[in-house]
Amino acid sequence: MNQTPCTSDDLLHIWGHYSRPIIVGPNGPFEYCAANAGTMSLGAGAWVDKISTGNNDIQMNDANGSTVKISRWNIVTYPTRPPNITSIQIF
Image (cartoon, rainbow, N blue to C red; front, side, top):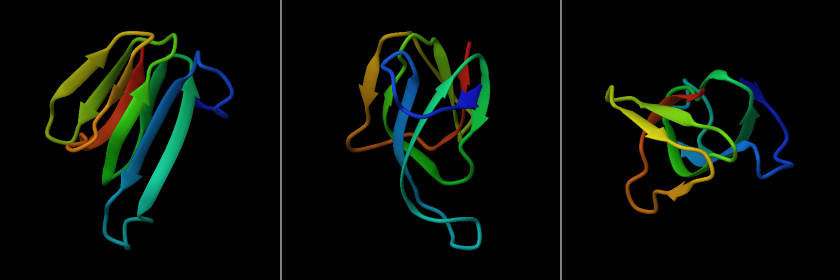
């Protein structure tokens, strides 16, 4: 899985924010796009507000141990209770 510029609707597109102690890393919003099969770690304190799967079947791994699978060509938003995602996998 490779992080890439957000130039196509085919890509996995993730919008979220970090909420973590300053010793761990910065806080605030983030936006990532990715392509190709594999797994990408989001690091500690990553909360996903919106995700667009593009042409990818994905799995999000939550900090509480649960997994969420989302099929390709879906856009999911979490306006009030975003999941605390540790990593995302493209199949």
